[in-house]
Amino acid sequence: MIKTPKRAIMENIIDGKLTAHEIKREIKSEVEILIESGKKQPHLAAILVGHDGGSETYVAYKIKDCEEVGFKSSLIRFEDDISEHELLKKIHELNENEDIDGFIVQLPLPNHIDEQKVIEAIDPNKDVDGFHPVNVGRTVIGLPSFVSATPSGIIELFKRYQIDTSGKNCVIVGRSNIVGRPLSILMSQKKINATVTVAHSRTRDLDKVCAKADILIAALGSPEFIKADMVKEGAVVIDVGTTRVPSTETKSGFRLKGDVKYDEVAPKCAHITPVPGGVGPMTRVALLGNTLIAAKAKS
Image (cartoon, rainbow, N blue to C red; front, side, top):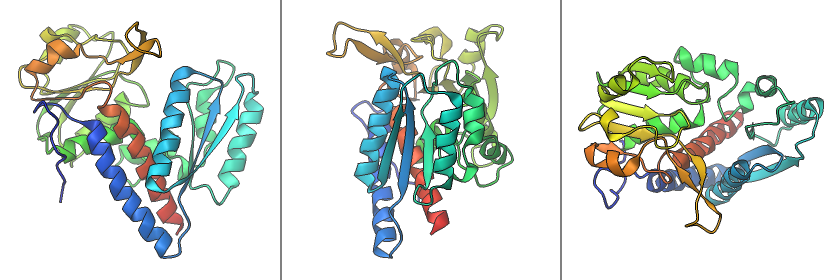
């Protein structure tokens, strides 16, 4: 039975942080059962190249998540001058390491490294980010696969908040291989049954296209791009954007902003995800879910 999370203070807020916390409790229970039955502890590894602030923060969260659910975690660090050859060699080692159930290579990578070559070097059975062409292809035709973490997390929010998607007009603004494209496939599949439009910066009359959406998903990486006049009254709005912008109001000197101008859009929405606390935590918990699947497949 689908579980509905406790509602946030504002009735229309989709609380990804709370939902992710509930899912982590569920994963932790499954891990305890695995270990009690004599199975090995699930193991997630991450490769981090360089010292990008956003990547450092994200990987630190992933390690903390692993601790919370009872996973073993490993962090492999390299300076940003590592050669492509050396990075591919390390990926091969992780592919061959039987103790590691899944691993990720944190993106973005330095310009001298071909990201697609790196993605394709990962064993599809350990590709818990769901970026390998084999997993993407299996997702497209509806076969079991590791689904890209952000799209997977968004679909889980729809399920847990019991948001009606069948027959709805869904507009996804953004066509990246990580979010927009795989999400468009998932939204159109039979379990979701939405009618999907993928829009982007070259879409003619983009504001009018967005304004017709029952479900509007912003995934273009442009802070506060989606304004109130682009949103239909009563729409469901999912904000995937997480851009770091300078701020004098925080100790870090920056804050995260989404692709949606939240304060003016939220009053129009039936449901909306905040930034932070919306899609981000669900992305991380989807990665844990994929790792658990990988571990159980080897048991």
